[in-house]
Length: 233
Ligand SMILES: Nc1ncnc2c1ncn2[C@@H]1O[C@H](COP(=O)(O)OP(=O)(O)OP(=O)(O)O)[C@@H](O)[C@H]1O
Image (cartoon, rainbow, N blue to C red):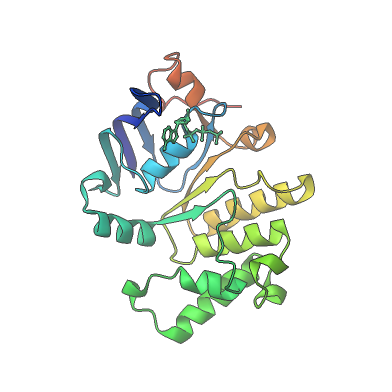
């Protein structure tokens, strides 16, 4: 359901010339898969997540999600497609500081779907309950722990019942105990919603627990031309 072909992402270098942030000949991801993205700092993990989600466009190549070539969509349509299809869990949570946990989740429901206000509210409360935060719905991000904020951001990412959940280092800012709990929660809720999960991480324990890992370091060095080859960790 996700197909990437001949992807290249270049950025202008501050010193002049260009930086190739990502070069990937082919990547296919099936619906419902759980994928880990590995590779040292700077190998292009965030770049790839941003390209899959349509946050940024590749310099070359095509990105198809459910047969829609998102890199060809005008920006407004691409934004709507992303809001309806993709849930993004950011490393730094990216919650709106002035809104409560419930309002943060509510704010991310796409109004284009014409969901009645009461149903929206019920969905938010159900998601916050699912992530174990029924007792914190009126807390603002500054009144929540790191693990709690990350759980709000998971609830928010799922608010539109996305087909694809993208998580960029979802456990990086959490302590050891919270890390595995947040990770398991993320995987469980994706399974319940039959959502595809794509997760960039440096965490070797997390990578070991995943069936399919794509190592961008290897693709970058040319050791592995085809990133669809899996590494069973
Ligand atoms: N806007 C930009 N302009 C110029 N270079 C950029 C830009 N964004 C990223 N890069 C470069 O592209 C490369 C890939 O960056 P990216 O953030 O995707 O790496 P990453 O694998 O996610 O790293 P990390 O594990 O440290 O988060 C890096 O070398 C980075 O310096």
